Length: 264
Image (cartoon, rainbow, N blue to C red; front, side, top):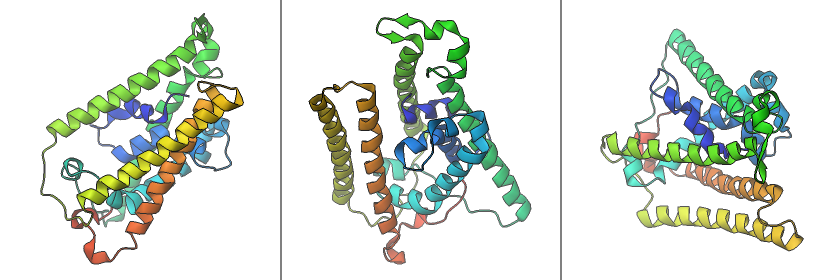
């Protein structure tokens, strides 16, 4: 499959529209969630038009709620200063029910748009994709792989490059604001991310080595898939537990600029 974060590139053209950026981003990745979290769902359930409403939409809403009410504030508290000072505080949820309904509609449209971009992208990069089944050229072999497989690898790299370029430009043009209060010392902030990176790298390397020992090889598709998904799953679990622990800290020492929760 194309690398999941690469799918964010497909929604970047829409972030300037009056949509919910977080919902766009989450929607663009949520069909791959069962690869990283044991939800008991199959790929076909989250990667089909019929599965958008019963599976992708509820999963995306759950992820949005976790992002705004559990993850965003502590994650920004652990983020480097250049990022903390550029991120806007969360907007307060409007009190009028009509305004809340409008916000809900924007979130719904954003999630659905993001999810559709994921399905369209995958339709060109999987053997059972809608486009692959209908465009013979994508099934032709070019060297060791079919064209759709080359498209999968190339689009993963291109997507990451686009996201990285967009992030670099955002950091360059977004003005700094007053540094929010934080209780996390720089040395602990750096240490925390080093620990997460080390655990992720160790698990990924361990699975690759296991593939070599078993005879499958480090570049076997199944070995690579498990190396990426399992290492990132554990890394995500560590981050999630750290975020939950952050919420148990005394309320008075939390960063003041990041405590109000909202939609964007």
